[in-house]
Amino acid sequence: MIKVGNCGWGFAPVKAKEKGVKTKLQAYAKHFNVVEVNYTFYKVPKLATVTKWREEVDAVTKEFEFSLKIFKDITHLKRFGKESIPVFETQSKIAKALRTKVILFQCPKSFTPEAENLKRLEIFFKNIDRKDFILVLEVRWRDQWTEEIVNPLFKELEINQCVDPFRQDCFYAKDIIYYRLHGLGPRMYDYKFSDKELNILYKKIKDEKRQVYILFNNFYAYDDANRFTKLVVQNA
Image (cartoon, rainbow, N blue to C red; front, side, top):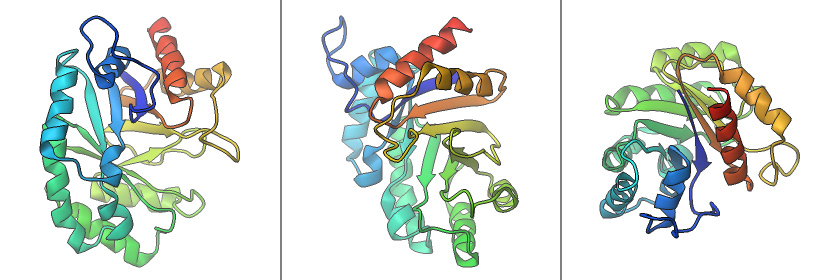
């Protein structure tokens, strides 16, 4: 199955004017079946807030899925240190309230695959309570995070690699395929994918047996995701 959506719903050009729709999130959920929550990367929302988000989309469809981008305190500030383990406990409560299946960890660009950082990842992922979730890690600098490093590491830690498929290959995906598309060129977020590029993307995943997530994270994310959804439906 292919799930398509955006990294966040705040900028989606949808309005709460449709029948049975009261909020922008509900309007978004009428168009897509997944969203990656980016808000949680910057701030820790109240449990009541995320519970409300879940209730809002349940009123539209109970099949809607929230994936969760983990709080930057874990990845960027504490950099997967031992002190970040209890932070994950708070995040897991938020994820459970959203009925989240997939949790995304995004490494900072400065997090290179040196021995100390690899050890931090090992300690973190082997000591958190993760049984309810599928964990995905996005590492940057493809010239450093090579297949020889990623494949055995991710296999040992039982995590999945997140990539932008137009920028690098996915070396290890145990459970799911998780793509975040940022755009191309020097101003990558200010990029609109062509129909040709969307067709290339579809051909890359059309025969995939695992669950596939396609999350657009560019200024034209809503339009790109909408066109890609139509492409998937047409070829179903």
